[in-house]
Amino acid sequence: MKIILLGAPGAGKGTQAQFLCDHYGIPQISTGDMLRAAVAAGTELGKQAKSIMDSGGLVSDDLIIALVKDRIEAPDCAGGCLFDGFPRTIPQAQAMVDTGISVDHVIEIAVEDEAIVKRLSGRRVHPESGRIYHIEHNPPHREGIDDETGEPLIQRDDDQEETIRHRLSVYHEQTRPLVDFYQNLDGPRYHRINGIGSVESITGQIRKSLESQ
Ligand code: AP5
Ligand code: ZN
Image (cartoon, rainbow, N blue to C red):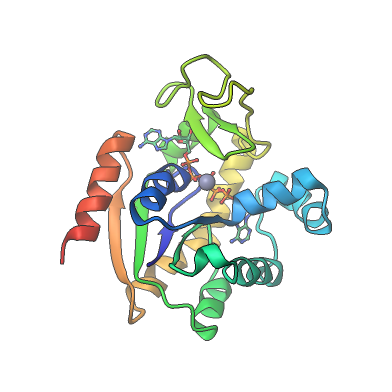
């Protein structure tokens, strides 16, 4: 089973990925998480990506395509995987088609821009595990502390209001065209989910849509 999660920054891709990966027993391939790990490890890729990510722009297609091609060859991807934040441009999507990576489902989580700024300004994450919280909508049991490890939560460097607005404009210009691309592509089933509502209700809608014929 291969699934693509499509949606604006802050639409809830990472949040819903947790349910989908458990449900189907497949690994999450988040290019954002992979890049943040490279930055934290100080690798060559991390050095190239850091300033682009902090500004809210996109890392080059060539780097990302190479990163993903390498990742999906790992044994844990044999039964499929969930792509979160990839593809993000038409050349990235076309590279998947050209390489013969066929996808079963594309799930678009649709959220209006106004809701996004609030969501991302209140987001807190546990950097090691990628666990995601929100100070109001999904708070940890103890303020600023990860529920499972007791370690501190952080705010992502790109979750500043000005950067969020830039990420949104990049989304509309470069990623939004993937909605038409996938609606017109033979193969995957396309699901459009309204991403406003509780995390649980959105999970329920995704599940229902995947289970319907
Ligand atoms: P990436 O990490 O992919 O960031 P993004 O796409 O901007 O998406 P986010 O992670 O911000 O949002 P999300 O949809 O996962 O939302 P979440 O579930 O966390 O990419 C970061 C950067 O890396 C990019 O800007 C780019 O530079 C680079 N990059 C990555 N991939 C690339 C690629 N393929 N090509 C080129 N460059 C690439 O939820 C957000 C908040 O909302 C949380 O606080 C959460 O608790 C809360 N929330 C979730 N659901 C709900 C709900 N239903 N109601 C209320 N609050 C909710
Ligand atoms: Zn995410």
